[in-house]
Length: 181
Image (cartoon, rainbow, N blue to C red; front, side):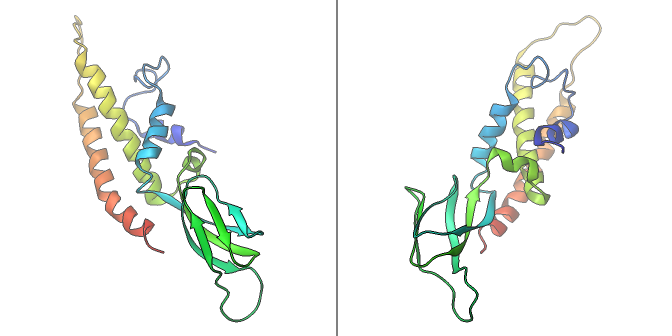
């Protein structure tokens, strides 16, 4: 299975061996990806379901909200359960159980390898934007005096600008779908 970092390197315009993020890394790409996850936490999230078997339950790390709780018994009628979710302690209090809980949580590092569709495109382009900006800053601040060659950063600038446009385009769509129930 291809990892998120491998997906990033497939599309990044500067080769791995030459980039500041590459073999002799000046910067740490893993730290950048963790920072990006924190930055996009308001835009991207995962909706999951779990079964709670007690009246007091600890929710997974990064849980933002509990969307719905239904009694996990097969009978006709209203099966919705009264709930109280305390975000500060990350605890869910239920009136009846066993219950099936649908909740929304932030992305974590292990989610990056399983992202699909617009969320994958959004997070990749956000990483591209950050990588290219840092690379342009470092390479632009060093003066190169070579006898037979020079460095052209215009393609990298165009790549970064395209990533910024894609991030801005997808941001409104992701927040619209992410906030719907």
